Length: 116
Image (cartoon, rainbow, N blue to C red; front, side, top):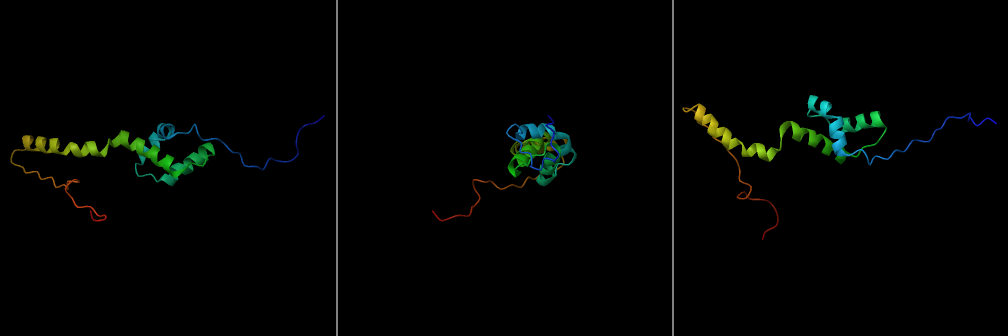
């Protein structure tokens, strides 16, 4: 008895993507994102589709890219806090210089919204 089929299977293959976390994606695509930190989310999604045959949602790709960028550049808030230390160091090493940091205090600035 011959059990081979003469026709090709035409149904699309459905794969679970629960194992493909943003952390896993960040580890897998670190080199690609480091090479191009401004890589589009769509390009990451397309790479996952080509490599694994999976449709990746935008937020998961965004979180993966964000994790790699955080490793490369650090957290933005922490870098802003270091500006004043940088200013102090500049003034220490270049005494005749002047350094001005202009910023807007979030707590003191007016925000839009309904009146209280």
